[in-house]
Structures are given as C-alpha cells and as structure tokens.
Length: 335
Image (cartoon, rainbow, N blue to C red; front, side):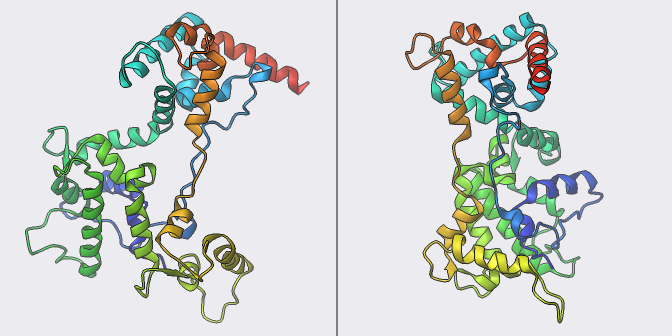
C-alpha cells in the first residue's frame, strides 16, 4: 500500500486533477495517492531526443534545446524571413531579462534555455492559476491554496467529516511548511514563480532541502532520522503472505548497498537521500549555451551580439527552408 505521505512530494498532477474534478466545498486529496518508490527520483530530461548532429547540418537538437520542442515545431512552419524576425525578438527578450547591455552573455543564454525547458511546467501552473487565485489579486495566499486543495473549514473543525482526520491534518501541516519555503519573500502570498516552486519543488534548488525532508519523513518509519534498507525496500515492495521475494527486490537491496549508501554505514542520511532522489547531473542548459556561443561568436569576445545570432540563425531556429533541408539530409542518410 502506498504511504499517504507520498502524494505530497509529487503533488502537481494530483492537485491539478483535484481542482478540475472538485465539486463542493470539501474536495481533498486522497491519502492513498502517489507514486511507488522509483517515482521519487528526479532525473533531468534531455533537452531534445534528436541526435546532436551539427556536422551533417542537422540542427534539430539545437532548435529544440533553444526553443522547446513544441515551439521548435512552430518555427519549422515559418518562412525564413519570419523565423529570423521572431528570433530577433527572442534575442531582445534574452537581453532584457539579463542586464540589458545590448549583448547576450553566456549566463543569459543559459537562463533562456533553462526557461524554455520548463515551459510545460509553468504552463500547467498558469492553466490552474485562476482556480487558486480566488480573489483575483495576482497572487495566491496560503489560505486560498489550502481551501482550494482541502476545502474550507471553520477554525477548529478541520477534517471533522473524514475518517482519517489526523492523517489529513499532518498532510496539511506539511503542505504549509512547503509553502513557507517556496514563499521566498515571506509575505504569505505566492507569485507564479513561488507557486511553481511549491508544486514542482524538484525543479528549484532552494526547495532541495524540503524535498529531502519529505522523503525522509515518508520512508523513516522508526523515526531515527535515517532510511534503513528495509524501509527503503518497503517503499518499493509489499509482499503478499507467503510470497517469495522477487529477484528485482534483491537487485534493489544491492543498489542500496552499492550506490545509495555512500558512506557504507548501512543506512541513508539526509545527504544520501538527496543524492538518490535529486542526483547530481550535468548542467545541460549550460552545455548547450556554451555550444551555441562557441559556434556563433565570430569575434570571439565571449558574448553574442544580435547580429552574430542572426548571422547563424539556422542553428538557433528552424524554418520551412531549413526543415526541408534537414529532411533531405535524413532521407539521404537513410538511403
């Protein structure tokens, strides 16, 4: 059986579904909702599934990395002139979002790529924003979020109408703690960025500690502050009476011993839990930003002018013409 705590780590889809389906005042998340153990691990998705094959004139990877997959497809339907014009406007936006000095730095380019890769997350928050922001003031207060998620209760009557009231009270307290961490300016009102951090904490460095704390709370059944191997396995597998342990469970025990338990003391502390659920990864936006800068910085001054970007526009964005050329290249390679 899935722990009632598990839903809070991966709450986004649950909250959005709840808000769409909710009828009446007391819509509440199920304490049985949530993923099994492997769903805890957050691996950064690749910037693109396309091969990184610039040498053969195929820039699809760069287009999807720079624009995001859906927007890259939109550019593929544009004329070269319109594609370049829209790229020019993106260059202006990148500079304005940074220091506004008329150049695109490596940091500004990396920030843009990271932003486009999170567009689907921000879009999901935007689609539900009005359900959270009930007073339409452009921010979401803790009480608005609480009432939208759990229903409205008078003080002292919280969850009086449900069987497992104590579990819901603990879930509510944990949500409030996460909200306070996401609310970086401490005004008890979440901006869109802060609400996104609440709903998708694994995407934000300042939320790392709360993700680790919640995972420890989920798994640490004996409350000793560590995850023992049996607690780790229990999060993945619940045997039926008399059932022989499957081979994959033994493999997980070996994974715990060989790769999760870094200091080999037989248990996971907070640092090791963080290494497990939020594993260190290559900074993909930075790698791609370095690549685009290297290929486009004609005067080698370590920054990009608008002219340099537009001079190498087909590496950044596609068009009907470049899309046709890439199709020809692919078909030729397949022959």
